[in-house]
Image 1: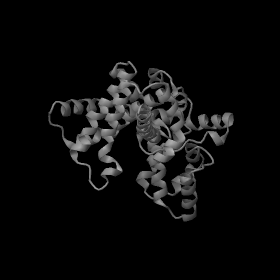
Image 2: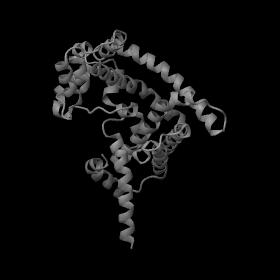
Image 3: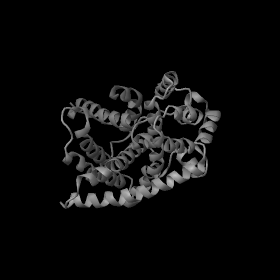
Image 4: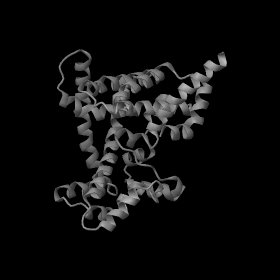
Length: 307
C-alpha cells in the first residue's frame, strides 16, 4: 500500500515540499499521529495492544487536533465542533457498509446470488458507486439476511439511501450519540491527562470517535498543504455529497446526477473501512503514508545535496 501511495501521490507531495517546508504544527501533528498509530501497526503485530496503548489514543488524538488547529490558526474548540458535525454522515456511511456485510455473510438460500453480490461489492473496478449498488439491489441484499431481528435495521438503512426523511431521522440519532461521545471524550481526556481514574470500558467506548477526529483533521490539513489551499477553508468545507444531503437531497439522487454529469468511470468512489475512511475518502491512509515516506526521502536528498 505504501508503494502504491508513493506512486500515486508522490509527485504532488514532492511539488509541495519543493514549494515550502512542512509547517511546524503540521509536522508535529504527523509525529503525534504516528505515535498514536504505532501500537496498532504491523510492526507490533505479535504484541496485543495493552490497555495503556488504547487509553493513550484519547489524549494523543486530542493533541493531533490541537496541532492542526494551531496550523490553521483556528480555535481548537471550533475545529472539534466542525469535525463533530461530519461524524454523523460518516457514521451513516459506515453503517451502510456494515449492513451490506451482514447480508453477504448471512448467505440465505441462494448461493449464486450471494456470490454475484459479493463479486460486485468487492470489485476493484465497480460499475457504479457502491451506494447505488445498495439502492438498486436492496431487495436482493436483504433476501440474504437470515436473522429476522437484523432485517428491520438493515431495511431502514437501505431505505435511507433514497429517502431523505429516513436519512434525516438517522442523522438526528447519530447527532445525539455524537454529543454524548464528545462530552465523554473530553471528560476522559481530562482524567487521563491529569492522572485521574478512568474505567477502561468507558475509554474503549470513545476510542473510535477520537480516532475519527484526529485522522480527519490531519488528512484535511495535509490535503490543504499539498494543494496549496488555506487550511481553515479546507477544514470548514464539506464533501459534495455531505453538502448535498445536508441541503435536502438524497444520496441516490445525488450520485445519479453526478454520473450523468461526469460519467460513471470517474465517479465511482472506493469504499474505506472505518469512520475516518468514510469521511476522508479513498486515499486518506495512503496519503498519510506517502507523506511520511516522502518526507524521509526528501530529507535524505536535502542532506545529500548539502554534502
